[in-house]
Figure 1 (cartoon, rainbow, N blue to C red):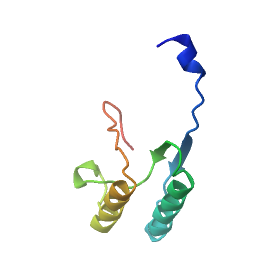
Figure 2: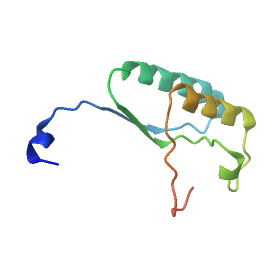
Figure 3: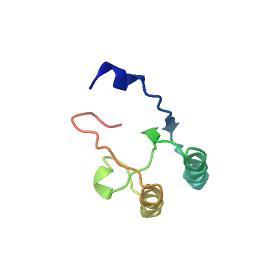
Figure 4: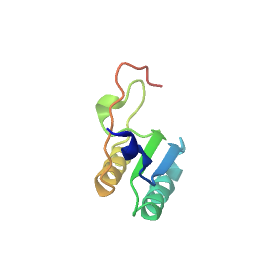
Length: 93
């Protein structure tokens, strides 16, 4: 990469989330993420954080997984074309 290549202007949208533990509020949380995606639709978007939701039953360590929540979260991932970057070698809470 040449130094002059670093001078390009790039606008990105970064969203950091901390998902709710209250199951009754999860649909609102997903709705808000959809709204945020719409606001960032013309720029690259990075969505990161603790969603307090799991995509697969194998991710539930010491918890009771809810299949409806998993389906909703997987639907969101598909609809928004999110890339799930795996967290490896770290303790999960």
